[in-house]
Image (tube, rainbow, N blue to C red):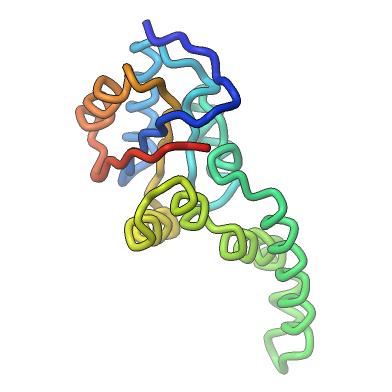
Length: 175
């Protein structure tokens, strides 16, 4: 079984991109069958709310653990507030945007831009173009599952993600 403790040192992170949340959930079930624990599986979806809901369903952790972008999210929230303030003065649409449901999303969207998933993956060693492509796929509704593993478990986890229907599989070294 793959019961391993997460330790504070670099380790492989296997990434699988899934076209639907149900495929990602099936992959998580297969990973759990291998013995992977909740804290070893991270999920990134279009919004943090989507990621949290899917993580709860998958018995995994939400993508904020993968993104590691708290400072960037704060910066993004500030950027979102600035965008909302600017939107207020735009004739015709400003008050609708600032008062409507999009107002809450502005901070999150700006947070993803400021502390992007692509930046985190590039920092972990993924080529910038690949990281941008994964971020773009998530923005269009795909789900990224990250599995923190030991070197000995990389092949089995890659095979499991592939068998579950991952459209792309990458591996980086998580700091």
